[in-house]
Length: 135
Image 1: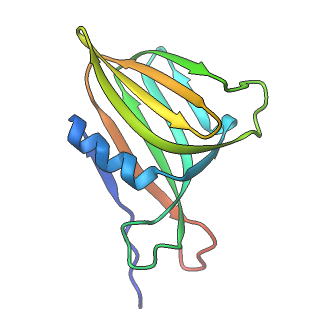
Image 2: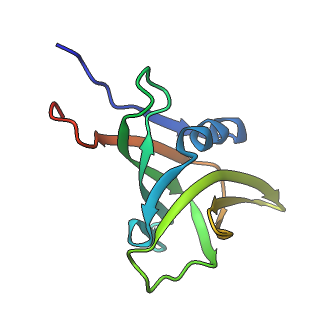
């Protein structure tokens, strides 16, 4: 029987975050799949992405990107009232601003989300394969 393993990648440095960015480039999500829990300082994205790390790179997998220690969140060119709008994630970039980090999520059509964080604590966790009869 073919075993399937779901992965979890933890990023605590700029280099680690580049790996998550590479895995998630081209991922699709709806505006409704973005949640910011300000009281818990957590920012969540539920994405559908190609499983680029496997031999069969055409398989789509649902994953969660969790950003911890987020102080604030700002968006540009994203209509938060259109919950079914499809976004395509291009990259995740990070910059050091004084004592905080600025994490920038770059989407298609010049859409941007900027997160201000005390430290880098990001997790990419696979949930399930889409259209897979065995999971």
